[in-house]
Image (cartoon, rainbow, N blue to C red; front, side):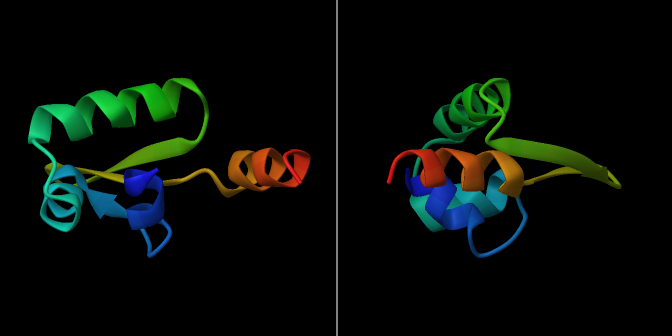
Length: 67
């Protein structure tokens, strides 16, 4: 949940997520892959960086169905 909360503030690279969460880089990368596989997170390339953001459609559907 901490990574999702971090991405609520906008798209970020892995290194930015590491700084904000204090998680190890390997943990952030692993969790981002899991979140992407579930459709909660999207990625795009920006130069040499990969930027991660929330898939708002999936997050909205998930939170709406859990009310």
